[in-house]
Image (cartoon, rainbow, N blue to C red):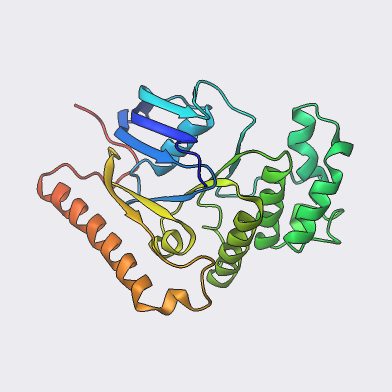
Length: 273
């Protein structure tokens, strides 16, 4: 049974200073995430998906609205929240296991208390035998698996994932999506996953929030009523294609309407008059 609103976002906005002036990145966006749920966020390029995720980390506060994690307003980074970035961000001078231990060192935890958990995670992502390898000796997929283990090492309740597989080739990306579903099924973590690939969002998530073109706000919410666990070949079934096509159509319609109204900005920054 899910606990309601482990994440509760109420009409948040984010305006920040860009190179060309003030950027209205997000406006009046709301979202609720239940405990143990898998939620994906999609939208056109530059719509504020990553900005939203960073606001949830507490590292870059929203400029309007309220956001809560575990019923507490987000004002600073929380131990209960882990984040996985677009790049693995492994420290090149540290071995794989030293990289995984790094957040525990920052939090001044006794690493010995976490070794069994980390060993199990390493085995689960098929990295056994690579503890002493440096990032340059690992493939891109292996580096991202290590970043997942690192994020899970201290057992956060929530995982925020910012297009974590975007830099991988298509085959490896599909493998990582399947691996992530296995991890989610085993750990019961709450996951918020940002992606520009609608197919990936539909395959992974229970719910897909769709954002408008910038400033990003709520455009649509899709409840993905596909079976769990995802059957092999689900991405080739008509039910899957129909959902993907409908989401794409919704985004294209919004972008086209803003273009016709002269309000669409395809660039990363825009000046607010």
